[in-house]
Image 1 (cartoon, helix red, strand yellow):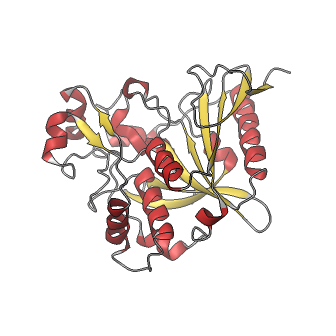
Image 2: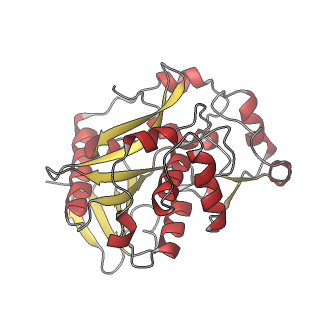
Length: 295
């Protein structure tokens, strides 16, 4: 099934157009010029080359989607990347199927993953390469992946509730099921969250900053607050799984993990290695590799 263009809705709650209806987001599409398509495909090719250089067959990938800069968030959407026996990489992720009104699991090619952005002029991708001991229990397992899929989607899902789920929450629960050697079963989500608590997974709170954004849930059906603790709602701080939180947890658990960050503007791709972020605006630093997008 081809996913609806809402794959980038993983953190819809932060969208500046949060007053719109979910139907508007489900129907939205972006027309790309030939130059923009070429730029994003070349960006995807750099992602493909970086993953091809990965020794293991599993990696974590994240991308910028919606502009969440007002919340100091660069990455909105994370997935787990698999390399097939034929050497092809794909990104397994949760997306919201608008036509069905429910979340689904989707395996997407790297080009589609890289092109899932709201801004074709500026984009970011992050890769976390995992050490061998981290990938042993993370092989493709469709039944377990489906048992970890919640029936209801919420873009701002609380990290420790079974009521809703967003894409990043599904991913961290997948990691928990693998690294915790949890047996498959109908209560797998509950056990995965218990394992995460025991392993001190604590998402950094997103500071909403204004009650206006908290009121967005009254207008956008994909946003909910009834799963968040009262104290978080009062403090305007929501504990939501984000790509950066997942990466921090992975780094703490497996210090040997390596991170590569990619970005592009209209002229170049910057490849940055290490856990420090690329400067805003895709500005290269000393030691970064630059690939020109201008022929």
